[in-house]
Structures are given as structure tokens and as C-alpha cells.
Amino acid sequence: MTRNFKLLLGFVVAAAAAHVAAVYTTPHVLMGLAMQRLGGEGGAVNRFAFGDRTTQNSRRVVRPSPDLAYSSCAYDLSGGPIEVSAAPSPNQGYLSISVFAANTDNIGVYDSLRSPQGIRFVLAREGQTVPGGVPVLRSPSAKGIILDRRLAPNAALFAEVDQARRADHCEPIKG
Amino acid sequence: MSDNAKPSRWAWSATIALGLVVGLGSAWWITAKAGARGFENKGWTGSTLAGSSGADPWTRAQIAVRGLLALNKSQAIYLTTHTDSSGAALRADCRYRVSGSAMPGRWWSVTVYAADNYLPMNDDDALSFDATEVTPDASGQWTALLAPKRAGESAWASTRNAGNYDVTLRVYNPTLEAQADFGKIPVPTITKLDCGGAA
Image 1 (cartoon, one colour):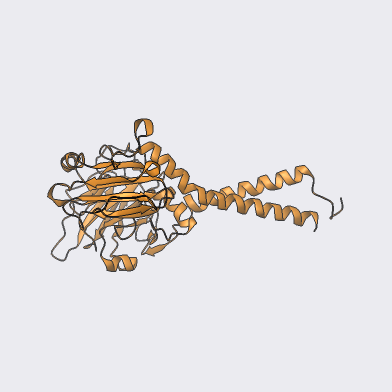
Image 2: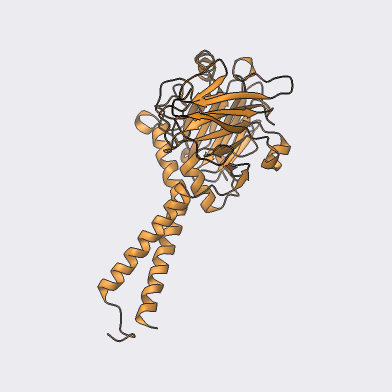
């Protein structure tokens, strides 16, 4: 093997390894940063944080929609499953609860079209024991983010849905 | 130096360092700068795999950078364009008429984003317009304005301080037909009216 070929091979291997590593780790790194930012003060987990109305100053997550009211729950299932519930918005306005795994995949979504009376489900890892009678979503990762989106295109509607979303829960199952 | 000589330690270090830079640079370019991996409909691009567990690593990384926490297509479809209908880049100092028809979903919106993927830094409280703000005519056609200043009573999204911006169409609770084929979505037409404060 010639000297130049060895160097060319080294270059290709280094470039490919760096490229693949960066592509694979980028979603996890950005998701980790988002969990820190959305967890609020102290990086709280397993409880909803209610975002202010989206404005030009909203910089926690890229490309936010100014027409939606966002609430988020950074989850951690290492201590067991959690129960998630969301009350409907006034006038049956659009509401969705979406669950994202640590690699950014949207592993589940519930909305007010299919659940007009409100949303309730248990989020658990594979193999964790869950209570009966409630829909169960299994997460491939212990950590991730749950996002509550509600239609609120103006200040008056934002005030209305803000009141409704305060009944949301994201908490470990007791007992 | 013989062609079969062992590379020096310095040569190896420089080669590996260069490889790492090229590898990281290409990853950054694909995720942050390259055209969206996915579907195009009349200049509007989007990914049918946004939020999907079936996304390949490159698509997943690109969406993480440009649209973290995007919903999958069963819940929302995102289409973005950087250009008007003539193919020219959108400019913050120009006025555009946006024309559209009924969207195949429960609710839709069009939002302006600056090049940094955040909302433009202006306090016009008009960073988007949505289905509740336009006034469709008898045939369902509607118009809105993309411009740095409001003009008239039509729906308006402000491009003030937006720089090299793009706009994203969101269609929530899309129909099954739209989910199956993004090409069936009647994307809005963006027509340049004037530029440079001619209004």
C-alpha cells in the first residue's frame, strides 16, 4: 500500500466516521437541550410547564407557531410510568398531545378530534407494569418530551385556552 | 521520499484532522443548509417522514435542526418555501399577495421565519395568518398579504426585519388523501406586488 493511498484511506475513514457520528447524535443533543429549556427552572421533569404566548422573543425551540399555545412536560420514565391528561379547550378548539422519544421521533399523538372530551393515557417503557383501563403508549426511551398544542391565534383565545390547560397533568402514577 | 514510506506522524495527524473537519462540515451542511430531503409541491418542500419512526438518520437530523418536535403527517403537514411563484427568493422589503383555496385539513396557518429558524424580530403581532383570518369568496378562494407593513384589511403576515426569510404552511388534521400524497395539497401562490417601499 502506497503512502498516499494510506493517507487517502485515513482521510475517508475519518470523514465518514465524523459525518455519521454527527448525523446520529444531532437529534439526541438537540432533544437534550430542548428538555433542559422546556423543563423550566431547575429542569423539572414529569410535570407540565405552561409557555407564554409565542412571540418574536420565543427562542426555546426552533420554528414555533404564533397561533398555538404550547405546554410541555419533559418526561423521565426511569422511576416508573407516568399518567398524562389534558382537558379540552373551550369551544372544542384544536388540541393535541404529542409524545417525542429521545431521538426526536413523534411516537404518539392524541387530539381533540378523536378525544373531544379530553385526553388521558399512560406513558411507560416496554416491560413496565401499568394500570388497566387507560390507553398505554410505550416509549423506546426513558426520557423525552410531551407537548400540548392548543389553537390560540389571538390574545383573547390564548387567555381562554391558558385557563383550560392549567388542568393538564403529567405525573408519576401513585401507588 | 519513497512512495512506499510510512506516513509521518504529522501527515497522519493532518490527514485525520482534515477528514474530521470535512465529515463534520458535510454533516452540518446537510442538516442545516442543504435542500429539504423529501417532497416538493410547486416550490413548497416538506418531508413525509417528519416526526416518523421511519425517518432515515439524515432526515431525522435535518428535522431536528429545522423543526424539532414536528408532528408526524397524521396530525400535521408542514410545507415551506423560500421563493415566490416566479422562483425568486422572498425579500423582506417586498410585498407579496398570497392566494389560496380551501385546505385539506381542519385548520391551517402560514408563518414567516427568519433565516435562523425563529420568528422575525418585530413587534407587529402579525407573524402569521391562519384559516380564521382570511375571508374566502364563494368559491373558497382567499388572499392575504406578506409585507413589512399592513395595507388594507386583508389578512397579513409581517416580514419586517425578516431578512432572508421563508414561510411555512401548516395543515392540521390533514385529510387521508393529503397525507397519502402531499402533491394533492393546493399550496398557496405567492405573487410579488412591488419592492423597496413602493407601496
